[in-house]
Image 1 (tube, rainbow, N blue to C red):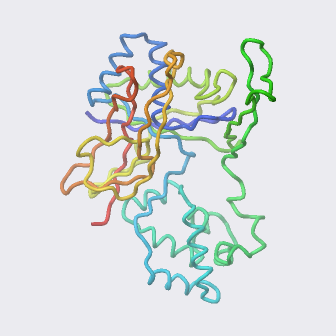
Image 2 (image 1 turned 90 degrees about the vertical axis):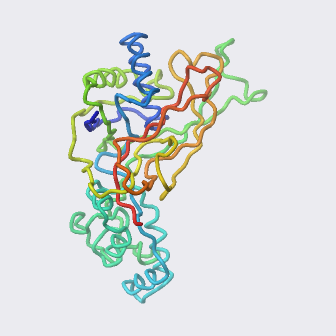
Length: 366
């Protein structure tokens, strides 16, 4: 059955402690489903996920208008020598320094992302940066940014160019991570723990999003699944909060829109691979080769009523992260999704880990 693509756009109202990752988002949806609809509906939908027929697939959260950079071509020594020709004084040191700076670009505009999916080489984008046609901090066209620096940008001058901060788009951070120091409370005495005898202080990192930024979460929704149900669950999640410390106001957000967006990920007839935009657990025969591998060790924690079970932690598991790319075997169809639900993740056999990937087709060099 076909899937329709929807884009949920949210605007954070508070700081977030928990990242907007696909498996955590899925868990919030399923718990909200159970509380609102009841156990029978919850089990029915969970069985569909476990049986390989997911009603919906969810991505991680991305800044609206941005997606992972697909580095689909590598640079050799000849390429580096060629790029040096564009640098003032043909400095190899400045060339290498600039390339190191560009490796820090992890996300690009959807327009650039689409071009890379369709076969544009990342090395060509990098060369256009050295020519002064693109910004080396985001790869957007200089004309789009109205930037006056071009090849005089400090990225190409070993960070020595001074007249830079006044008009650089990337002075404004999308998110600020702040480490907050907290004090533990003794639940028996209802006072702070004695720091002389116990470790009462601890820290937690909180993300504060810029006021002018929104976050997009993408869904592939099976045609026979009622999208209004997802909208209803997210309406409750927006009010109750997301992730850690939501009971104290963390993870609060407003829903800007939740609409179908079929044009954002164009289907490629000649794609021979896929990129994932979710945390991903492959199933057997999902792919032929791993092209780009971004991995993480996930140490999941149970939510809802299970968080009070006495054993709230899942077993560690390795997952691929968004931006990972996989090559398909020849003549294999590019599907709407890949991955599976992972069992044996906790001593309670009912508990599973969401590992389906929101995938988009890409062209992989042979």
